Length: 303
Figure 1: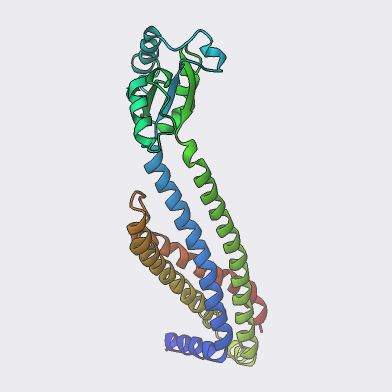
Figure 2 (figure 1 turned 60 degrees about the horizontal axis):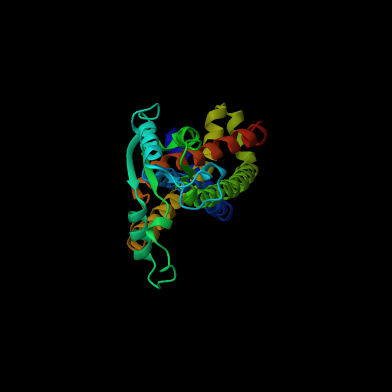
């Protein structure tokens, strides 16, 4: 009987304040879409880092025939210097950090360069003018600086480069997009909480006489307040469900159907990641409604 009464009051309250309830649903939907988008973007960034950083290499370029680097003032790298550099990488203190070492000779570098020079612009170059290098794959890409510091000062080393620099600007942009989405989400969540508070307040004011009568006949505070709390929770949960649906279809059609078939070399997030975010969106929605109820009901449902 009590449950039927509470549910009936919730339905009546939503019907009386249908416009405000719809506004709560829409604002919650938009705000949680930003929250979910920020979370999914960060998951995509982490996935790209795990995938790409595990594949990139450190390139240790050796002194060529002519170099402006003072370290190469004695001339091009010698065979003895190359052996010493390889020894440091494979047998020295760095051996636990290095997974694989590949040596690219002047001739190999020249052949690769010629293959990419379709217009023959650099046809006057010779193999002796090319720069040999060691390509080092690390067991832990985050230990790049340790390897760089240990090899940059070795005789015969011209410059050490980390291929992660190629992706740094991309990740910086994606991180900025996550921050912007999170900031917009915070603003929208505040707006949603204020709107839920207003909706509960209007509902409580419109039924203030009823709540006073219930108080006079001995109804508990929880019985009086529960319908108002559920009204806010139902509206916020409706917005959360719409946000989950929006994120699901966005990932399904934008990423799975379009991006995955257009750019095949990237490992993308999928709809399963949306389901991992969905419970948190529902928790946030219910949390907003709970906070709004605590702020509002103590004042507008007292006798």
